[in-house]
Amino acid sequence: MGAECHHTESAQPGLEGAALASAVAAAQAQCERTRERLTPPRRRVLELLLESDGPMKAYDLIAAYGADGEPAKPPTVYRALEFLERLGFAHRIESLNAYVPCRMEGAGHRAAFLICECCGAAQEFEPDFSAQFAAAKTAGYAVRTVTLEARGLCPACR
Amino acid sequence: MGAECHHTESAQPGLEGAALASAVAAAQAQCERTRERLTPPRRRVLELLLESDGPMKAYDLIAAYGADGEPAKPPTVYRALEFLERLGFAHRIESLNAYVPCRMEGAGHRAAFLICECCGAAQEFEPDFSAQFAAAKTAGYAVRTVTLEARGLCPACR
DNA sequence: CTCGTTATGTTATTTCATAACGCTGCGGTT
DNA sequence: AACCGCAGCGTTATGAAATAACATAACGAG
Ligand SMILES: [Zn+2]
Ligand SMILES: [Zn+2]
Ligand SMILES: [Zn+2]
Ligand SMILES: [Zn+2]
Image 1 (cartoon, each protein chain N blue to C red):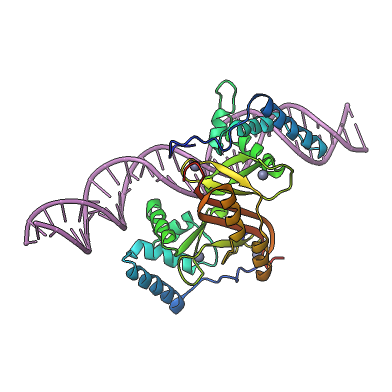
Image 2: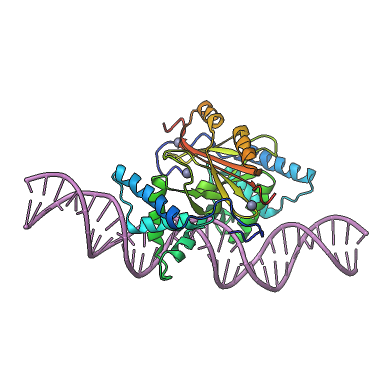
């Protein structure tokens, strides 16, 4: 990330040390509450996402997976990502083919992103879809999920 | 498309005959107004999109390209899609890796889609992004484009 | 302990998209 | 007309993203 400009991507610095451990522990706790299992591959992929400064591609995760530089096999990472998305610990950004850890407090929320086309930063925000839901209702659709990705320039890159 | 259910995908029937010719002619006219060129490959891909009942994958277009069953080469189709998107004649649906012709009157609009997870239909609608623009402004982002894809069930599949 | 279920390991393949290079045809300039 | 610059195209090859399929292992209820 950040290949397109010289701006530092500091809006979402990766976690490390105690903050990282704390975030992983919170996910662990949430899993125990819902009888889900934060297994080693799932935990590892979550760590990698949390440590990153920005969205990570699946093959970035695959390459970074092993502590000793050994890559993972693709299904390992894709399965972990599927789990993390299902539980709301991570989100896929469709327009980037990339993944980010969830930065919003509280699970069960709907995600939306502001994506900087210059530095690659992706900021999650709490969306208000009421206008879109109204449009869907008019069309007779029963909406289950909504993906919203706004692309432009972040404050640092404007 | 429509592989997941038995419902007919009639919400967006493909164009044929005079209606197809008319839509292509309208695109042609619009190109001439803006000094753009609707070259044979671009015209052919636009036709294929307009004829289709639903979103088409890039390799569906590649396979269907030649009148005699000869496929196109991938860059031919991807270049045409890039052009059609740029002029607003087609849209990419990120969550499907697929493409649809623009169904909205008048160019320069912002696109959004209601996507049926059962029959695969994708209905374009005119979105109201005012709430999201407000959120972006608060965050200091300058938004250039917005992608919105709502997934659920269409009236026929509910 | 036994069995059904969930998760992982592994190999291979499929699907999606772009890089790179040279050729062609059009429009503007002299 | 001859030249040039460039958008568009054809072609070959490769890169990137995601999944199919099947075997094995770990778990947890009864
Ligand atoms: Zn989130
Ligand atoms: Zn930026
Ligand atoms: Zn449109
Ligand atoms: Zn449907």
